[in-house]
Amino acid sequence: MRERHVLERLAEVNPQAEIWWDSSPLVYQSWAEEVLKGAKEEDKEIMERQFNRLYNSKKPEETLFRGVTTNPPLCLNVFKIQGDYWAKFVDRLIEEDPEIDKEGLFWMTYKEIVKRGAEMYLGVFERSNYKYGYISAQVDPREIHNEEKMLHQAKELAKMSPNVMVKIPGSKEGYRIIKVLTSMGIPTNNTLAFTLPQFLACANAVRDGLEIAKKNGVDLKKWRSVITDMTARYGDLGDLKKEAQERGIELSEADVRWAEIAIFKKAYRIVKERNYPSKMLICSMRVSPPIDGKRIASWHVEKLAGADIVYTCPPPYIKGLMEIDDNIEFRNQIDEEPPREILNRLLQIPYFEKAYTEDGLTAEEFNTHSALLATAEEFSNATRGMVEFVNKRLEEKRKAKWSSR
Image (cartoon, rainbow, N blue to C red):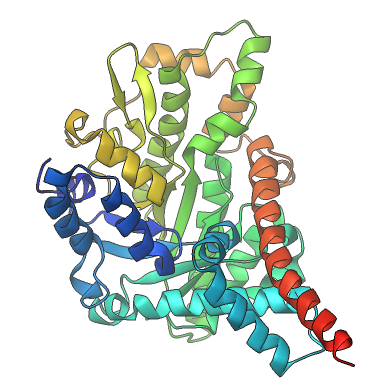
């Protein structure tokens, strides 16, 4: 096993790149310990050093992870790993407010998880003069069309800690909220976004919001914006393969991954060339099966190495990268264009052509995009899981109360 972790080697290609942890910071130590348990004995010392360099709670400002992305589904994992602790926490909330309902209880618990995670990165935030150390916290994914609810929740999340960056969905309504939040100096992360038209809608909303903020003299020292591309969800959950099949086009694993990477590369270039104040962020990366019969790989990081972007990595993906570490050699590939023959084939598929063209989708079409709908439903189900967790405590408490009468 190499001494340098695979993510450390990725970051070295461009020092301006940022590696973020894609889960609640509260589960990092448990994850590291679990991975170490299954490691080869001869690798454990190296891995312990690597994990301490990725994130060390005693010296967070000196470690690799410069920020965090999280959401209700990822916070649900906190309940699964630390269930007993959070059950007691929820019980205390019920005791303090016996009339609270399950939705209010969920929201208070979720905000506390966000707050504690943010506190773990305050050292990074302050040491970097507010450049790094943000933790993204998502508004309720069940409310992606409810502007009033999203705005209210965004303001509440922003109050949890100065380094909270609010995640807003790539819906038509979401971009209006991003503009408003930016005008108030609240950092934002555009999530549930998969296409170039969405990324540009976000970039323009941020730019317009900033103009308002500057006119109003809003303090922007603790503000920043990232635009998330949920790459593999675009290819795996949307209509790319379906529409290709309908047109008699056979897509290989390489074709699907190039579709995702091509969209990101074009968005990255436009954001840079037009001096938009946002930074592109890639998430939902995958370790692919052998591509073109060659090797197991992860093109989402390899083909984008060298970019001044954020790579946000969930625990299973990091473990997957570690398992194929010997297969990966990073070099600057961000400016390399997709193969022309593959791009021409993809452009015959409306699902891709619309995602790759600046004006390929209207704002109304954002709301019906298949990858957005599938992801929103998945996230909503996980949120319902969180609600169910706290509701179980609520019902047990009330049942015990009635039994004692």
